[in-house]
Figure 1: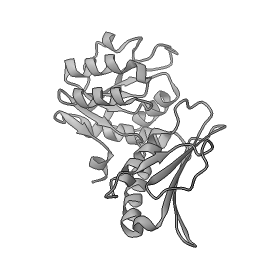
Figure 2 (figure 1 turned 135 degrees about the vertical axis):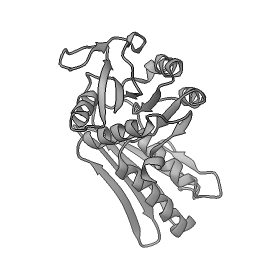
Figure 3 (figure 1 turned 120 degrees about the vertical axis):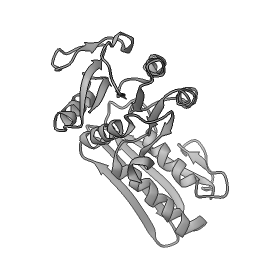
Figure 4 (figure 1 turned 90 degrees about the vertical axis):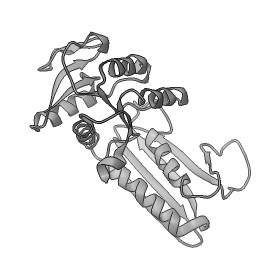
Length: 250
């Protein structure tokens, strides 16, 4: 049985994760962390992760990037595995995560969806086949409450694609301020924010007289919750180091 501490327990994703866990018999949420306790959880909820008293195997985090320091300290001190579902980290914070993985096991991915990670693999294969003959554009869509842009998933897809080239690729986020032709070493990344869109990602390979489009559409937050819970069970007992969705897919 995998014992989980859930940060962001009273948020939208926290509620979905609770629902997913309740339907399984290989894990349970033993404590939650949230500044705003709605009083609806069957487990204790603390304002700070440092106050958690329960024994646990894994922390599943869907909170806020500003809470990273305390999260990493807690997991390092207790040698508890960490599954990070929060997005919007800057480069300095990503380095913090990598450094902390020397002392505890950390599962870090920009998207918990199995489908998105398959999309990344398909995009890498497409680059291998299409080579330099196709221009690549990524379009991502999310709800109007998402504060970071482009999405971490769009950057993950761009990074996966870039790995397949033998030259550095540059990311072009906005073309309105310049008047010049598109170069062959760029990947365009475009963000749309509106309504209640859960998550849409599209990779366009535009060639001479033909286009190829790979896409993924998330219809509910449950796809991310299922991935996070699967990751939590997988991480129980793992040794120090960085892990991601490749381990679950393989």
